[in-house]
Length: 305
Image 1 (spheres, helix red, strand yellow):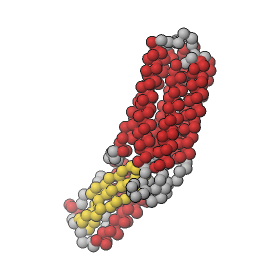
Image 2: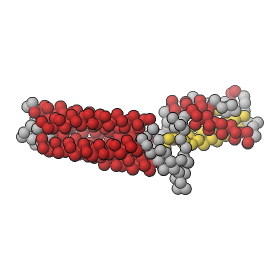
Image 3: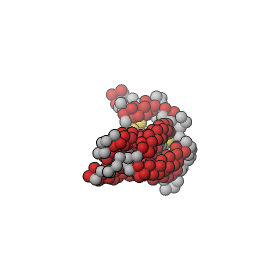
Image 4: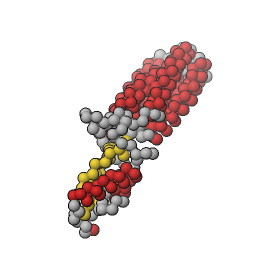
């Protein structure tokens, strides 16, 4: 993976292509399931269809966020537009949670007033189709999202994975209703609602953490610290704060250099630290280094573990 830079727009492919694929797939699949669910009289499949159509709307939000996030910095946004991905993920999370509440309400209504006839066989075929399509879409979105550090795409992938499990539940509910357990179909719809709500809460929490610059995981901090300490003249890493900016990171750190160095020599050390961090962590797009003088006595040295 090549290092990224804030002064250049990020390549739109394959991240944007994956976002467009998710949008189109959810729209088409949602319409197919809605037609099959209403025709077959399946409450669970209709609920699943509306969830998939909502995924199409979320896909449009994600696609917009991906396109905005890949713009280069400008006068008003010196750190770039990467946070647009986190905002898109936040919108997705809220919409997913809202869909979970709506699906749950519909399932409760169906439990109080169950359908007099079992769902038609076409509902079984539509549910199986949804399992395969959603499972494949989830695999693509998660792989591309993790490879390119896209929080919005990963959020869509997690949503698609939950949908695949939900569609499997729809299949079981429809099958049970056709075998003589009419209450199973809306019960499955209620379980789907809980799964969707859980996914929405998890996605929302992750997006909020990124927008609020929550402290990075210790493994990342260790990698960044080791890269900085590998530079000759860097005696200590006193502070280090990596912040996510969508698909990349911005790192602020304070290093200690020998107190006898001139300002020019300390600046050279800072530039070498920046280069070392970029080499060791290609996802880092910008490094801000502050230099402090440090006495060379060992007892004065402090490092981040």
